[in-house]
Image 1: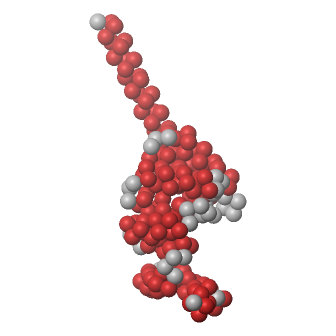
Image 2 (image 1 turned 135 degrees about the vertical axis):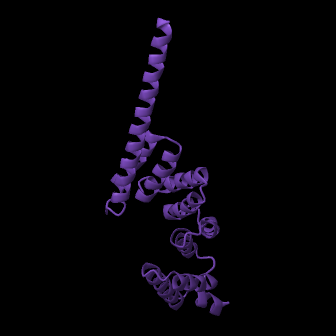
Image 3 (image 1 turned 60 degrees about the vertical axis):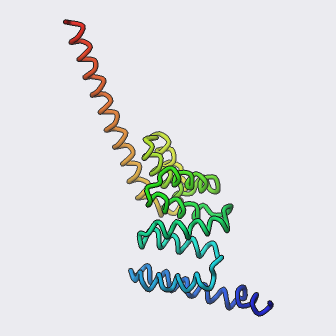
Length: 195
Protein backbone atom coordinates (compact mmCIF):
# COMPACT_ATOMS: atom_id res chain seq x y z
CA UNK A 1 0.00 0.00 0.00
CA UNK A 2 2.82 2.40 0.87
CA UNK A 3 4.59 1.58 -2.40
CA UNK A 4 1.38 2.24 -4.36
CA UNK A 5 0.84 5.53 -2.51
CA UNK A 6 4.41 6.68 -3.20
CA UNK A 7 4.11 5.63 -6.83
CA UNK A 8 1.12 7.96 -7.18
CA UNK A 9 1.84 10.85 -4.81
CA UNK A 10 5.57 11.13 -4.29
CA UNK A 11 7.70 14.02 -5.49
CA UNK A 12 9.03 11.76 -8.25
CA UNK A 13 5.50 10.88 -9.37
CA UNK A 14 4.57 14.57 -9.49
CA UNK A 15 7.75 15.32 -11.42
CA UNK A 16 6.91 12.55 -13.91
CA UNK A 17 3.40 13.96 -14.36
CA UNK A 18 4.68 17.50 -14.82
CA UNK A 19 7.33 16.37 -17.30
CA UNK A 20 4.87 14.43 -19.46
CA UNK A 21 2.30 17.25 -19.29
CA UNK A 22 4.96 19.73 -20.41
CA UNK A 23 5.90 17.42 -23.26
CA UNK A 24 2.26 17.15 -24.36
CA UNK A 25 1.83 20.94 -24.23
CA UNK A 26 4.98 21.44 -26.30
CA UNK A 27 3.72 18.98 -28.92
CA UNK A 28 0.36 20.78 -29.03
CA UNK A 29 1.97 24.23 -29.29
CA UNK A 30 4.16 23.02 -32.17
CA UNK A 31 1.13 21.61 -34.01
CA UNK A 32 2.12 17.99 -33.45
CA UNK A 33 -1.38 16.94 -32.47
CA UNK A 34 -0.86 13.20 -32.79
CA UNK A 35 2.22 13.32 -30.54
CA UNK A 36 0.35 15.50 -28.06
CA UNK A 37 -2.64 13.13 -28.07
CA UNK A 38 -0.38 10.11 -27.59
CA UNK A 39 1.35 11.78 -24.63
CA UNK A 40 -1.94 12.90 -23.10
CA UNK A 41 -3.32 9.36 -23.50
CA UNK A 42 -0.30 7.94 -21.67
CA UNK A 43 -0.80 10.51 -18.92
CA UNK A 44 -4.47 9.63 -18.52
CA UNK A 45 -3.60 5.95 -18.27
CA UNK A 46 -1.30 6.74 -15.35
CA UNK A 47 -3.46 9.43 -13.72
CA UNK A 48 -7.08 8.75 -14.70
CA UNK A 49 -8.59 10.59 -11.72
CA UNK A 50 -6.59 13.82 -11.91
CA UNK A 51 -9.29 16.45 -12.56
CA UNK A 52 -6.86 19.11 -13.77
CA UNK A 53 -5.30 16.70 -16.26
CA UNK A 54 -8.73 15.55 -17.45
CA UNK A 55 -9.70 19.19 -17.98
CA UNK A 56 -6.52 19.95 -19.90
CA UNK A 57 -7.00 16.95 -22.17
CA UNK A 58 -10.68 17.86 -22.65
CA UNK A 59 -9.64 21.38 -23.65
CA UNK A 60 -7.08 19.99 -26.11
CA UNK A 61 -9.39 17.36 -27.60
CA UNK A 62 -12.49 19.55 -27.68
CA UNK A 63 -10.91 22.72 -29.06
CA UNK A 64 -7.62 21.92 -30.77
CA UNK A 65 -8.50 18.56 -32.25
CA UNK A 66 -12.08 19.78 -32.69
CA UNK A 67 -13.76 16.72 -31.24
CA UNK A 68 -16.21 18.32 -28.81
CA UNK A 69 -17.99 15.00 -28.12
CA UNK A 70 -14.82 13.37 -26.80
CA UNK A 71 -13.86 16.58 -25.03
CA UNK A 72 -17.28 16.69 -23.38
CA UNK A 73 -16.88 13.22 -21.87
CA UNK A 74 -13.47 14.12 -20.45
CA UNK A 75 -14.73 17.47 -19.16
CA UNK A 76 -17.71 15.82 -17.47
CA UNK A 77 -15.35 13.41 -15.72
CA UNK A 78 -13.22 16.31 -14.54
CA UNK A 79 -16.21 18.32 -13.30
CA UNK A 80 -17.54 15.28 -11.44
CA UNK A 81 -14.25 15.08 -9.56
CA UNK A 82 -14.09 18.81 -8.84
CA UNK A 83 -17.27 20.81 -9.39
CA UNK A 84 -16.46 23.50 -6.81
CA UNK A 85 -13.10 25.08 -7.45
CA UNK A 86 -12.29 25.86 -11.05
CA UNK A 87 -14.07 28.29 -13.37
CA UNK A 88 -11.62 27.15 -16.06
CA UNK A 89 -12.99 23.59 -15.85
CA UNK A 90 -16.59 24.76 -16.25
CA UNK A 91 -15.50 26.88 -19.23
CA UNK A 92 -13.94 23.80 -20.86
CA UNK A 93 -17.20 21.91 -20.33
CA UNK A 94 -19.15 24.85 -21.75
CA UNK A 95 -16.85 25.14 -24.76
CA UNK A 96 -17.38 21.46 -25.62
CA UNK A 97 -21.15 21.90 -25.29
CA UNK A 98 -20.99 25.05 -27.41
CA UNK A 99 -19.02 23.14 -30.05
CA UNK A 100 -21.90 20.65 -30.14
CA UNK A 101 -24.30 23.59 -30.61
CA UNK A 102 -25.92 22.88 -27.26
CA UNK A 103 -26.05 26.58 -26.46
CA UNK A 104 -28.41 26.44 -23.47
CA UNK A 105 -26.31 23.75 -21.77
CA UNK A 106 -23.14 25.70 -22.56
CA UNK A 107 -24.72 28.81 -21.04
CA UNK A 108 -25.47 26.89 -17.83
CA UNK A 109 -21.84 25.73 -17.62
CA UNK A 110 -20.62 29.30 -18.13
CA UNK A 111 -23.03 30.53 -15.45
CA UNK A 112 -21.50 28.01 -13.04
CA UNK A 113 -18.04 29.26 -13.97
CA UNK A 114 -19.30 32.77 -13.21
CA UNK A 115 -20.55 31.69 -9.79
CA UNK A 116 -17.05 30.44 -9.00
CA UNK A 117 -15.28 33.55 -10.38
CA UNK A 118 -17.59 36.35 -11.54
CA UNK A 119 -14.71 38.45 -12.89
CA UNK A 120 -13.02 35.76 -14.96
CA UNK A 121 -12.39 37.15 -18.45
CA UNK A 122 -12.84 33.84 -20.29
CA UNK A 123 -16.10 33.15 -18.49
CA UNK A 124 -17.53 36.55 -19.37
CA UNK A 125 -16.41 36.23 -22.98
CA UNK A 126 -18.11 32.84 -23.19
CA UNK A 127 -21.27 34.22 -21.57
CA UNK A 128 -21.34 36.93 -24.23
CA UNK A 129 -21.40 34.22 -26.91
CA UNK A 130 -24.37 32.40 -25.40
CA UNK A 131 -26.20 35.61 -24.50
CA UNK A 132 -25.84 36.82 -28.07
CA UNK A 133 -27.26 33.48 -29.28
CA UNK A 134 -30.33 34.32 -27.17
CA UNK A 135 -30.41 37.94 -28.44
CA UNK A 136 -29.74 39.35 -24.98
CA UNK A 137 -27.57 42.19 -26.20
CA UNK A 138 -27.54 44.27 -23.01
CA UNK A 139 -26.55 41.30 -20.86
CA UNK A 140 -23.87 40.32 -23.38
CA UNK A 141 -22.41 43.83 -23.23
CA UNK A 142 -22.44 43.72 -19.42
CA UNK A 143 -20.60 40.37 -19.47
CA UNK A 144 -18.02 41.81 -21.86
CA UNK A 145 -17.52 44.84 -19.60
CA UNK A 146 -16.93 42.51 -16.62
CA UNK A 147 -14.54 40.49 -18.76
CA UNK A 148 -12.56 43.57 -19.78
CA UNK A 149 -12.39 44.75 -16.18
CA UNK A 150 -11.23 41.32 -15.00
CA UNK A 151 -8.68 40.83 -17.79
CA UNK A 152 -5.84 42.46 -15.87
CA UNK A 153 -3.13 40.89 -18.05
CA UNK A 154 -4.87 41.62 -21.35
CA UNK A 155 -4.94 37.97 -22.40
CA UNK A 156 -8.52 38.11 -23.69
CA UNK A 157 -8.68 41.84 -24.51
CA UNK A 158 -8.71 41.51 -28.31
CA UNK A 159 -11.33 38.78 -28.28
CA UNK A 160 -13.49 40.68 -25.77
CA UNK A 161 -13.32 43.85 -27.88
CA UNK A 162 -14.03 41.94 -31.09
CA UNK A 163 -17.08 40.33 -29.48
CA UNK A 164 -18.19 43.72 -28.17
CA UNK A 165 -18.01 45.12 -31.71
CA UNK A 166 -20.02 42.13 -32.97
CA UNK A 167 -22.72 42.60 -30.32
CA UNK A 168 -22.95 46.32 -31.09
CA UNK A 169 -23.11 45.64 -34.83
CA UNK A 170 -25.86 43.06 -34.32
CA UNK A 171 -27.76 45.43 -32.05
CA UNK A 172 -27.44 48.29 -34.59
CA UNK A 173 -28.67 46.04 -37.43
CA UNK A 174 -31.64 44.82 -35.38
CA UNK A 175 -32.52 48.39 -34.37
CA UNK A 176 -32.36 49.49 -38.03
CA UNK A 177 -34.58 46.57 -39.10
CA UNK A 178 -37.12 47.40 -36.38
CA UNK A 179 -37.12 51.08 -37.34
CA UNK A 180 -37.67 50.16 -40.99
CA UNK A 181 -40.52 47.82 -40.02
CA UNK A 182 -42.14 50.59 -37.95
CA UNK A 183 -41.81 53.04 -40.84
CA UNK A 184 -43.44 50.58 -43.28
CA UNK A 185 -46.25 49.96 -40.80
CA UNK A 186 -46.79 53.68 -40.31
CA UNK A 187 -46.86 54.18 -44.10
CA UNK A 188 -49.46 51.40 -44.48
CA UNK A 189 -51.60 52.95 -41.74
CA UNK A 190 -51.40 56.39 -43.38
CA UNK A 191 -52.30 54.89 -46.76
CA UNK A 192 -55.26 52.95 -45.35
CA UNK A 193 -56.59 55.98 -43.45
CA UNK A 194 -56.60 58.06 -46.68
CA UNK A 195 -58.69 55.54 -48.53
